[in-house]
Length: 104
Image (cartoon, rainbow, N blue to C red; front, side, top):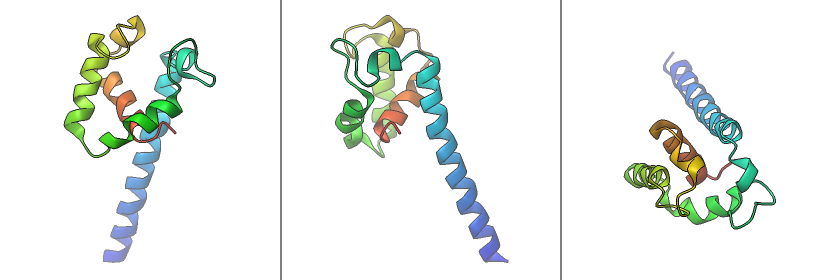
């Protein structure tokens, strides 16, 4: 019986992680992020792949994730992009988390 509960917990956790990643990719699509950060990226914007490589070092650091999301919205990251500044705190954090986790 304990094994069934363990397997169920693992499956639920896996589905939640997959849904979060898909939701963040969908969020990036919905917010128009791929217009500048797609492949190939536009102008001086880094691609999501480049961002994921650069920000991978922040995995497992929720406080840094929050700080980066706040900086993104405040215009301190990439010089005040209006699309970044219009993000809600929740959306900014979801996108930052998605990038830190590999933007897949």
